[in-house]
Image 1 (tube, helix red, strand yellow):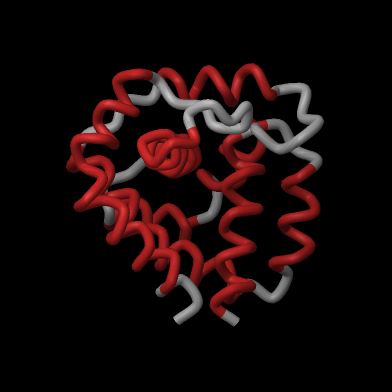
Image 2 (spheres, rainbow, N blue to C red):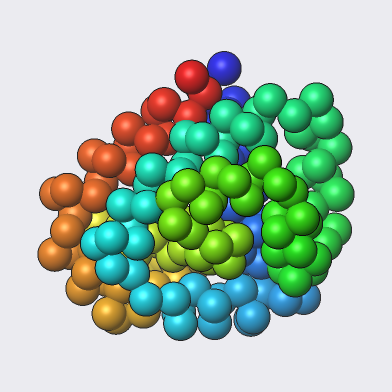
Length: 155
């Protein structure tokens, strides 16, 4: 169940960031990730929110249908959908995050960490030099936290 939950989170985040293959908004999603500035506090808030958001998403009876509908939405529509979900917004508020912070910040953090681990040359990894430097400086602390958040997502 945890692997399926982690898969759903990755699919959701890929859709949320506007980076899913074939999306006409790919350039906008890419630029949002490049413009997002990671900080230690923001990274910790994002990581802390992942398991709760995943658990919430997994609890929805129509999770597969929601993901399919989200795949057809623009990033702005997906952002509005998240902002109009009181339960999801309550989770984000608890972690001092906006809907945009979560939808852009989580993929930004993941890709910065991937780049810091040597995946910077991959065409699918988008990260600003500042975020890669941040990830390099904090890799030893953030990577285990993110791994734990991903592993605990289905609990």
